[in-house]
Length: 276
Image (cartoon, rainbow, N blue to C red; front, side, top):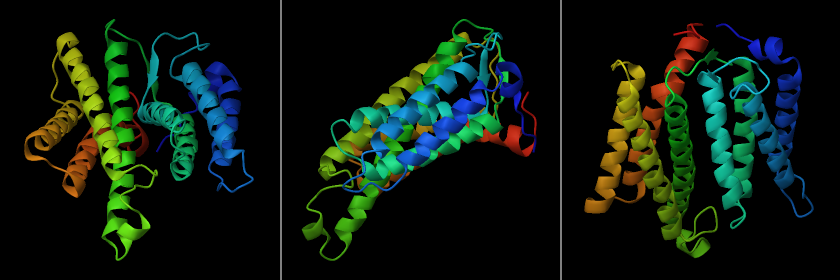
């Protein structure tokens, strides 16, 4: 395993300071909330903003003086979690989600650390459409990540309802305090939008690819797309709901994760080959 600390050499200490402060802010956001605690919510916003600046400096290349984006296992996972946090920030304006906030804050701190320890490599954009394809792919990751987050809450709420006295304790409401049917609709709305974005990413990749390759990324991505297509078709024509539907969602999300993040993890972390 090879740890690369390229950002230190190219941007000085700024990324390291931002990463440490963002992790501290995320850690404060993960503190248990109580009646007098007003710190976690603004700490999460502060961590999210610092995380955004870190992504712009490192992945986006602002101030690096080097063309291209920094791609790899750590940066892509970091950007994905940041986008999920963006969805949570908007959603929490309407529904308080203290338990979700703590989970996302811990994940935010973890991916900031991973992006620093495993920064990948800078890759120039050889095709003018390559950045759009890449951003669509990461956006679909984030949308499916938000869907998975809501699906876990949906499954937890349904398990509680099956317990003796569950309906009396939680009258058709989920972990978020939302009615279960509304939580289910919200979950699969993320799936629907994520599927559209993923389809655009796949079509753009096919249209702009100069040499088609059946590599691990292509195979897992297409398998993930097929699973989500089957899930949406099953819900529309067969009325799939509950555990059956969420299992398909988890399976598709896992395939997508293996498509890029998982394969890059193997190459960069286990094999130490960031330039593959």
